[in-house]
Length: 265
Ligand SMILES: [Zn+2]
Image (cartoon, rainbow, N blue to C red):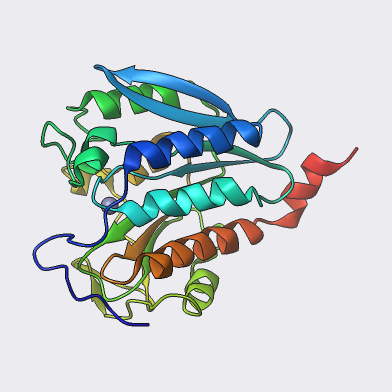
């Protein structure tokens, strides 16, 4: 695998037509039986997919909250297209949380707000609309947020898991390593990594002046989750494969006893 070495001071890699990718995700989601809800955030339309209704485990996935992380949206598109979710899983998917930033290939939205630092103060209409929608949904057993990092040397993840649920983090790293480099630095994104590629951040909301999506989820909807960070200085297929593999490993390790409960006739 050859590193691109083109990201100096920001993401300068491949861009995608996010509107076209989102339209294709909407088409595929409808084909696979997802209901779609369109919510207006001050004129910016957010799409949310849902396929649920049976007893089972509730999984939430999101992508595209940073507009300069195209592999996250492509990985989500691949997951929806494959439709290989474990039996007994109910799904809530936010395929593109920052449409205006994604259209411009910028981290922030068009108003200059980093939406993934806005879950405490709710300055952006997009985050307010997202939370309005989330508050109408049930609790999630697991949340997975797809991201990329242009500065990283490889794939890594954050895990929030204060109750000590069985963790998939180490299995994810081992599986992703087969298709995508892992960032094994002791310091990743300014935080100490517990194990190669794994960060378990401080979860005290009082110590965090700005909240990312995952911290709001932890406090309001879901006590266990992963933020996956693809390495965006590597070729697009490497990053996409890494993230798809990571999600598949996480879902494959959902305790079968929970799945069985939803599958009995
Ligand atoms: Zn991001």
